[in-house]
Image (cartoon, rainbow, N blue to C red):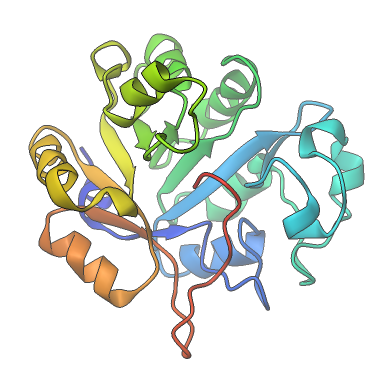
Length: 254
């Protein structure tokens, strides 16, 4: 397992503040690559099947535009500004060309449909990359896709407490938050919600850490990053503004 996944803090959606520099933008990624800081980013498909770096399903929070990303062609969304900055939504291929191995990449798969379409297009782009990267997903079926079709890719299982967010599927929620499908998907690492680092779950995750690296998202303070390091977890972090506020506002999952 590479040291960067196990020990080196990873910048959540690049180094951004969503004021002067937008998350998941080429500017945010260049700020990392210039210093060799590992980058976490999200990828989705546009309406015409292009892979872009973007977090939300909807365009409202980042672009101030109604509608879903998957309903718009890239030619349209490429002109949308991100958070009122000069940044725009980049193609994943542009990210790979920009970073070019200067920083490791942790690529989060955000598919809206059955696994295969997004995963296949991302895999095709990464096949020729030749630089350090790993993929991760909340959906175990996405992790399984990579096990079956790209077993050489480092793959991770994202985990959070689904209890309140998936009440319609309690058995599935239980299986997901306790990583019961790992025996099938065989992830190389886990990436867990920072709210799970308490009580018996903290003890459980420390035992998980003995078998594979555990990353924690999202550490938005120096104290939380320190806590992660003290317990042997790597951190997916965001910078902290001078006044103490964290950068960015999440919509839904990591």
